[in-house]
Length: 82
Image 1 (tube, one colour):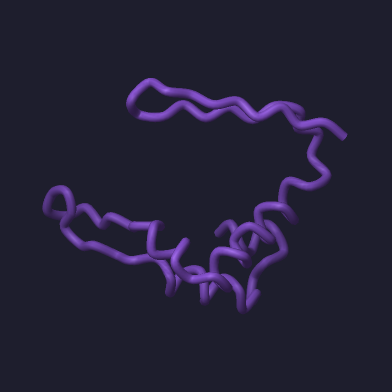
Image 2 (cartoon, helix red, strand yellow; image 1 turned 120 degrees about the vertical axis):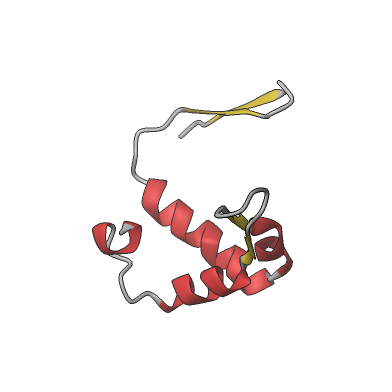
């Protein structure tokens, strides 16, 4: 759905990104499909393609601040300047 809505349908980079993600069925519970993206970062081309797509999608949005809240209550903030 994301690909079609954002002009990426048929983009060959998406296949490589998808193949680089490790799928763990029934984790942590039966019926859940966990997708482990740490394996994506081990694949240089797939991780670069992922970053390129994210940059393409957000490049011309008027974003000035990015905040990240981790599960253990740590947070980081990145202020963007033009």
